[in-house]
Length: 270
Image 1 (cartoon, rainbow, N blue to C red):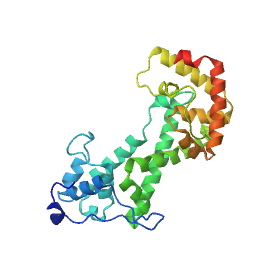
Image 2: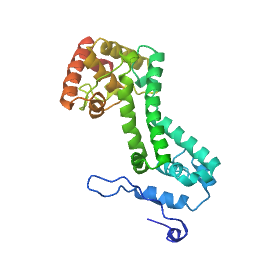
Image 3: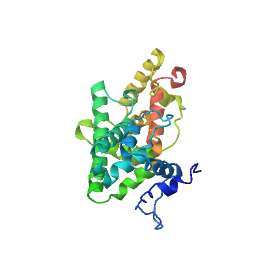
Image 4: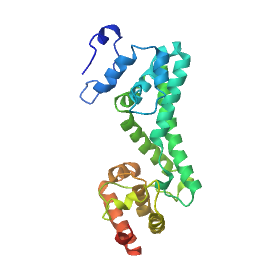
C-alpha cells in the first residue's frame, strides 16, 4: 500500500524490465521493490549510495539488493561517479555475503582445500555476474532482470552453477564432482545439522569427523552426493549440480547412507 500517493507525481517513472516470460509477458518487480525504487528516486543519488552501505535489514534506511543493482545498472550513474563507486562496492559485498558458506559445511581433507574450493565457487560466480554487468553497460543484459526481481534467488542459482564448475576443476578431483537429487536423509535432519553448527560441541565434532571419514571411504559417485548433502544442498539442487536424474541421486544417497550406518550407529551419536 502506497502511503504517499503524491510521490507518484513528483518522482520519475521507474524504468520497466525487458526480460519476457515464455507467454510473452514482461517480468515485473515485486511490489515492495517497485515501491522502494519510487521512494529512492525521490532522494539524491549520493544519499541512495550512502544508504546502500547499511547492512542491518531491520534498519529504516536499509536498501533492498534489487534496488542497489537497479541503480548500478542505470546509465545515468556516469553523472554520479562517487555514488556509483559506493553502490557498486555495496553490491559486490552483498554478492560475496550471499555466496559465503561456513567452512564447517565444506568437505575436504584440510582447511586449505576447503578455502580453495570456496574461493573457486566465489570466483566463478563473481566472474559470471561481472560479465553480465559489462554486457549490460554496453547495451542491456536481460539476465540481470532476474536479479532485479528476486536477487537472492537468482544469486543462489548462480552459486549452483559456480559450484558445478568448481567441482569440475582437475585439482578438486577428490571433491564431489557429480552429485545428485532430492529426499530427506533416513538419519533425519540432525545428520546435516552437525555440519551446520557454528559452535559444535566436542561430541558433535567427534561425530562429524567419523561421518566425514565414512563418506571419504565411499565410491566416488556416492561420495560426491554425500559431500554435497553435508554442504547443505537439497537433493534437487544436487541433481542440478551434477546433471543427473533425481532417481539416480536418490539411489546413490540411499546406498551411501546404508554404508555409513554400517560404520557406526549414527542414531546413538547424533
